[in-house]
Length: 366
Image (cartoon, rainbow, N blue to C red):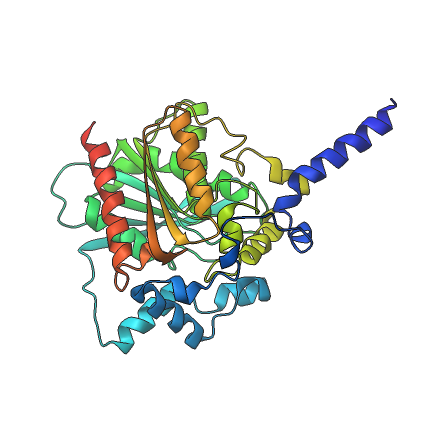
């Protein structure tokens, strides 16, 4: 066999492997038979609990469109789930007391500049260095920022009595994979080096992330292990992006779900991959290609009405198989992005309490 023939075969095999995580292939792929096929139209509103349904309806009223129907600029500026929560509170004449948390905006260095981060310090946590949670927001590595996800960061600071450092990172398509992952680890190392300057204890660290941020949090723990630096005591992965297969049971059952659909995930992928073979990278294939041994204990949280539900289930299972102590909880009747909606969605408050309990237990062990 000639070298050119071998090269052609390898290229064909590689492209077959990444097809499920390609927006071009997504448009043509055949759906696999699945016991959940009867819900293939997602039926988000019918399946949502009453709290969640109110938020989803408000998103419709605000004019939020499917992400995959928007340009990058439109997707970044259209009303978000967080905006819908604020609108619901306004409609109902409710005011939510601000947590007793002070904030400080700073920056951390990356390869070619700096990125923002925001430090949330609980005011009633007592004296002495506090544990530190490094938090990574979601948005498919393309949209959203630390402002969009502030509710989650505030809640974690208040409920754990730990300092939360919410990290911004470079987004696609301006900065392709693995830029966000590189930034996430740079921020983690910055926290280790600087925690004492803002009242934190660098020996008591945890990582938390939602969606794409859940993927970042897990990868930060992996990089800390591999580079033999201070490891987080715990990681909380909230509906994480953990694999590259878009034909899982939950992708099929929730392919048209709101606010995250299968089409939206394909849209995100199209914006962040620099080349097709990046989809085979262990950073994106946590459940099939990454080495998960020796990672800190984990809490994995999923939402029922979410294409990423199966990713979270598989991540929890793979962590357990790797010998990592893992707790897992699925919340019924809620969608992707529910975690920060505690002001109006009861399940969000329960999920935050669940995460906070595991984090506090981890901090108390050291």
